Amino acid sequence: MIRKGWHVLPKDGRTILAGLAGALALSLSAQSAAAESALVFEYETGQGLYSEDPDTPWYPASLTKMMTAYLAFEAMRDHRANPDTKVFISKHARFQPPTKLGLKEGEDLPLSQALQALMMKSANDIAVAIAETVGGSESRFVAMMNAEAARLGMNGTHFVNPNGLPASGQVTTARVEARGDRR
Image (cartoon, rainbow, N blue to C red):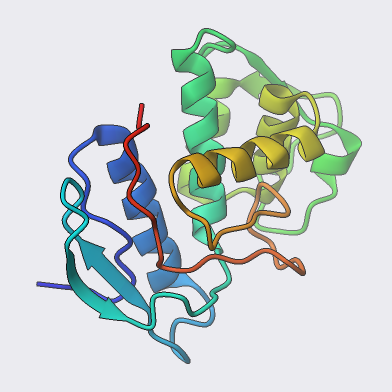
C-alpha cells in the first residue's frame, strides 16, 4: 500500500531512517490535512512508482527532531560522542517552549537519556541541548543538519532549528534525489 508522504524506499539502513523521517514528518505535519504530497521510487533504479505533488513545500515538524537524533547517532557511530556524553542544559535550551523535559540551566543527563526524551517526549529543550552538545552550538548543528539533508538528496529541505518549532524558512518536500554516496 502506498501512503501519502513517503519519501523513498531505500535498502540502506541509514537512508531508510531518512525516508521514514520524511514520511513521518509529512504525515504528522500541521499542514498535512490541507495538502497532500508523496513520492515513492525504487531506490536502486530511481524508477518512480508513485508521485503526487512531490515539490509542494511542507513544514518539517517531527522530521526536524528525527534529523537531530540521526546526527546524534552518527556522532556516536563516529566516536565524537557516546551514550554517556553529558548533555548540559543551557539557558537557551531551558527556555524553549513546551513540550520539554524541564531541567534547570546547568543540569545534565547522558546523551542516551537525552535521545530517549527527544524521541519519546518530543522535548524541545532537549533537542536544543543535544544540538549544542553535538554541534558545539545550535547554529553549527543546524548547518550540520542542512549539510546532511543535502547529502541525502533532500534538496527541498532546509532546517532553521533542531526542535521543529515553527520558523520562517524551515521547510521540506517529498522530493528526494537518488544519490550513490550513501553511508
